[in-house]
Image 1 (tube, one colour):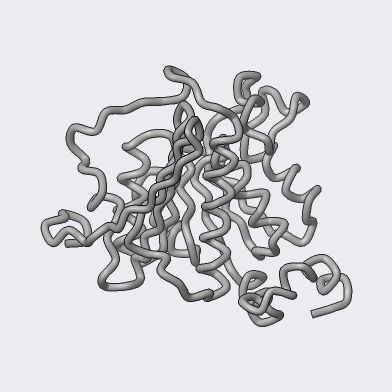
Image 2: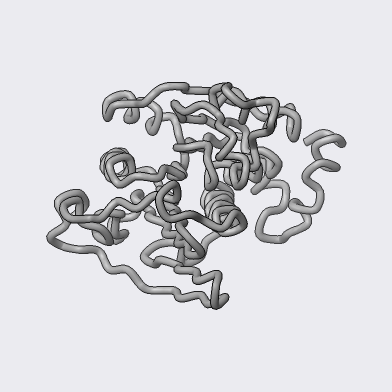
Amino acid sequence: MDDERLLRYGRQIMLPQIDIEGQEKLAQSTALIIGLGGLGSPIAMYLATAGVGHLILVDFDEVELSNLQRQIIHHNKDLGRPKVESAKDTLLSLNPETRITCINEKLDEAELTEQVRQADVVLDGSDNFTTRFMVNRVCVKQKTPLVSGAAIRMEGQIAVFMNNLPDSPCYQCLYKEEGEEETRCSETGVLAPVVGIIGSLQATEAIKILSDITDESTGWILIMDALRQEWRKLKLAKDPNCPICG
């Protein structure tokens, strides 16, 4: 590692859990980010600045004025641009070493599978159950760790599914594909820092996975109530009857 990289990542390398070895692992890693909105913005920015070598960005939307309240990777000058292109510009301004692949389309399951095969970790920042269930199916099939987040109103949650481990539950152990009620922030609202907190936690968990920091990163869900500033951590068990991982 050259002097410039040592300086750029020095505060992170000082951590005994990371060190130079962990930083090198980050540099050689690929993270797939689904959605460049409120969650995907801090996810992508922190993974880029932390030194993850390759980011694959997937989003088919364009930047709108209503996005700018919480989607901090985009700016006024980006209105009307594809989100992946806007995000790429911001990420390269933060860390020009980052290799970025932009996918400006809605992927079907076969196309998503091709992208997941390239990734060491997948981060889901989507806002609908259809996408979340599809991402989960593919990650379980490919045995790829999945970091899932969601935020609405003044509430948020994050869960990590280590699909490369045989005893890990999956997203569908927690939510059933039939009967889940779809609620979006465009209908109920969301406090801007809430998505920032959850997205930052998703980035943290991804960095831990990519740098091989061992802990209990699977089998739990962390729930935040920002109004009362309360947190709950619940243990998740693998559902033996789950149609995806059971």
